[in-house]
Each structure stands twice: as C-alpha cells, then as structure tokens.
Image (tube, rainbow, N blue to C red; front, top):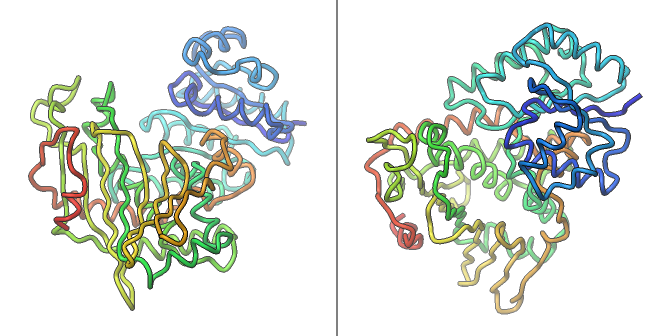
Length: 419
C-alpha cells in the first residue's frame, strides 16, 4: 500500500502550477518522495494525459515526465458531498490505516469551509483519524474575530496536530538558517547579541505593482499581505531565545514569547500608496488601501528594548528582501533573502560574505512538503501565533492615517530616520 497520498484541491489553479507541482517534481527527481501518490482533484473532464497537457501549457519549464509516474487526475466537484464519498472509496483502495494523507487545500477561502465540512461528513477526515492532515495558506482570516471563528471551527473537527498553516516565507532556506544559526554558527552568535545590536531593519521591497490582483489586494493591503504574516514570523525567528531543544513545541513556545512581547511605536506608523494605484484594474475609485507600510517595533525586555524598523512595499526601485543588524561599533550584518541568499559581514575583523543559505537550492514549497512529511511543525504557524499577529495588526489598522503617495525612488532610510 502507498505510504503517503497527497491530494491537491485546486489542482488547476495558479499556486499548483507555479509552486506545488515544481516542488513535487524536485522531490521526486531527488528520491525524496518514496512510495507516494499525488491525486490532482478537479471538476474538469480530464484524464491523466489531458491534465498533464493542461499543466504544461501553464508552466512550460516544468518537467512533466517526472510527474507522470506518481501524479494522477481524479474528477470531482469539491462542493458535492457525494463526490467526497466516492473519493473516500478511492482512497480506501490505495491506503491502509498507516497511510499518511495530505489534503492540500490550494483553493479560494470561500470554498475552504465547504471542503472541510465534506471531508468530515464523508468520513475521510476527523480528529480520530490522525494520519489525515489539512494544509492551507494565508490569509488565516482577515482580522482577529474572523481568525477566531476559523480556528474555533477547525478545532471542533480536527486537532491542532493535524493542521498545517502555510506561510511560504517559512519554507525558504532563510527560515531554516535563522533557526540553525542559534545552534551552529559560533561567529554569528558572538556578533549578534543583546550587548552588540543597536537596531534591526527588515525590508521587503517589490518592483511589481499589484498586477491583476486588484479585487484581492484592494481588500487586503500591505499590512495583511506582508506584515501580518511574513514579517512578524521573521521577527519571531530572529528574536526568539535559543530553544532548549529543536522539538516543535519548544520552538513554537519561544516564537509565541516574542510575539507577546512586541510593542508598536504608534508614532512611527507610515501608510503609503504608489502613484497610479487608483488607476489599476478593478481597484475602487477612491481606495485608501495601503501598498506600503512602515513602522518601528520593540520587544519588551527587562534590560534594553532593541528597535526593529520594518518596511514593505510594492512598486519600489527593486525587488529585494533583507534583514540588517546595525551594531554599536558601526558595522553591520546583513542577511540577504532575495535575490541573493547569503550573510554579509562588514565588521573589519570579519569582513566578507557567508553563502550559508546557498547550501539548499530546493524550491521553497519542497521544503514545506518535506516539513509536513517529517512533522516539523515549527516551520508552520500555530493557532496562538495567528491570534497574536491579528491582535497586533488590528490595532495598527485602527490607527490608519493619511496615505503617503510615493514613487519608486522612495528613500527608505529617510523614512527610518523619522522613527
């Protein structure tokens, strides 16, 4: 019998073509998916070959031959309970009580509740069936109240151990590195500590506009899209104390401690909108949605509060992401996340570049899938983290003020100087 079955809900969607199938291809080619079947679920009238043709039309770079042996198409309507009952019979024919089943819900948020309801009603998944795992992506609700409703609904039907909330930034090699350096990189541990750090900057810049995502982005904005998830998770990783062990629960516990201690400097809040945003397709005529957000945070500490300056925005001069440590001696340590993946040291005694992150060249989503298969929950977002992050962002949104209309040559350092 098959050891692992991965069910792709939303198998004809953009996320599947761009991220999930390339990751599965990489894992298969590198012999990291032994005894695994992938079932692509969809309502289109496809057989396997028609599905492969459909996929390759949308991602010409994908090695479709690497998928043929273990990816099959299964026609079903994910809003039809009878189809779930038929799916259960199909799964039963491929598996036994020891088979791990990953339900990857790469579908729109409005369909999520229906799918989860029918998985439970059909007998496919429940709390008692701990080998049935649910995987879904942000947003985990758009505010605290909505997130609380979603989490309550989930825990009524499933255990927290079965639920994997994906923040794709945690699938990047950077996330593993930020955990590892606390244990394995003596030099950085000596440089980066409470006595040496003056402040920290976290910058996630994008060159692109919102492209064709008008209806989604106009309801979301930069705070929910980037700060509420990616940036707060990065802060939790870089600021957490060294866990006693690398056990999932210990790492999550330390991340939660950081999030609970975060304090926002409300005088530092900057909300921006790029010039021309109001002319984007399907954006409200007088939209006040922010495409840029900046602020300063500190972590409540008995000794010293280290400022953390953050900025994220679209339509800027380059696509670049980095974490910069400003040290008291005037030197810097820069962890480059994109487009390079390395650590740059400007300390005169240690000047140079560490290509630590380049040790792993796997697609981000292959790291995510492997983490699920190996039960590495630390690279996913827990229920408690979701609730704390929403509490922080809801308070910020309530104070949203006048928008700064900016162009791509916006001077980030000038914004940070005003904090």
